[in-house]
Length: 354
Ligand code: NAD
Image 1 (cartoon, rainbow, N blue to C red):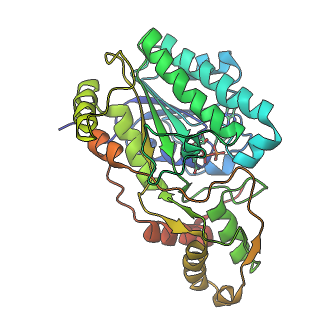
Image 2 (tube, protein in one colour; image 1 turned 180 degrees about the horizontal axis):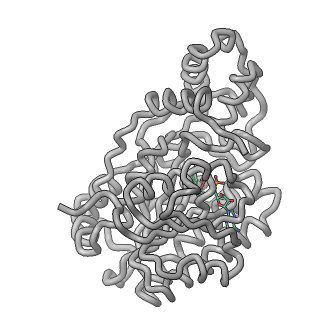
Image 3 (tube, rainbow, N blue to C red; image 1 turned 180 degrees about the vertical axis):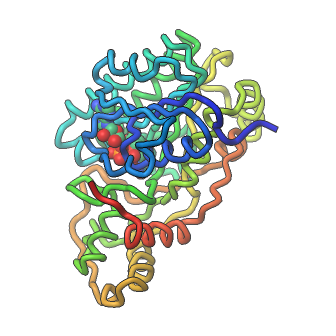
């Protein structure tokens, strides 16, 4: 039985001061790992580190992945790299494609090359459901992507191409995780580029109307953070042999799908990471409203506003998570409703600020 939890290891989490990264750092520290966080605090926060920054096995390196020296310093002595530093948000990338590309592509290559030089065991990185672009297929299956709709989506697609290339050229084992709308504790509700769930929670908590872009029928495959923490560890730990064997079975079962490349001796895979369930935005607001009203019953009277559709947004997103389940052994244990309940509770009672 292979281990499902990273323990007693040295792990670099880039973007460790962000939403997903800080949750990974905290879990890894609780599991007796030595954790290095590389972050430039461009979108992450010091308050995300408060609960564990004093831990004896935690090291913060304040640095920029666009600077190769910072990447080298952070990866020194590490066994695993969980690369999560990036500039997220489709609208941000439409407004500033140059910066998004510098960080998400330039920084990615720096980090991956530094990881290769250090001969890390595995490089696990955050890709995105954005790579499916204009594909109308539902649910989304890993081998069928469409045309990217934003510079952000392009950067994530380029990451995947680079990862495979590095695996082939240098033998670096890479696993890309296409996250679908992750949510949970410590997700930033502030600013123009905030994700929908923390933004709506904050609005409702202030008894202000959340604004839905479109008619509210758009849907997303919302994924609770604990499911992400589970799959990242599986992606890092599972032996190369097991992944190859299970992948080959998965491919055969899936109508005799051919391998994407001629070289199966390298390990470079991508997986959807989601819950595998669709929730539309009207339903989302209803659930949030119900949960937050337990805290302040006047929230139940707050009306929803509707605005125009947003550029670069797709109508529906739903993942086929069979590959992650069958190959990595991923089991999304936390259901969306319960995750939303926990998240609302955290924002009402648990959130800390700088
Ligand atoms: P986040 O913004 O909370 O975290 C990103 C972190 O990277 C921040 O702490 C930020 O300061 C850091 N960072 C940015 N540029 C950097 C640089 N040049 N050098 C060093 N650090 C830098 O975002 P998140 O939601 O935690 O996302 C983590 C990763 O997952 C990102 O790669 C994102 O694209 C990807 N992703 C997230 C979601 C989601 O739903 N949250 C969905 C798909 C993909």
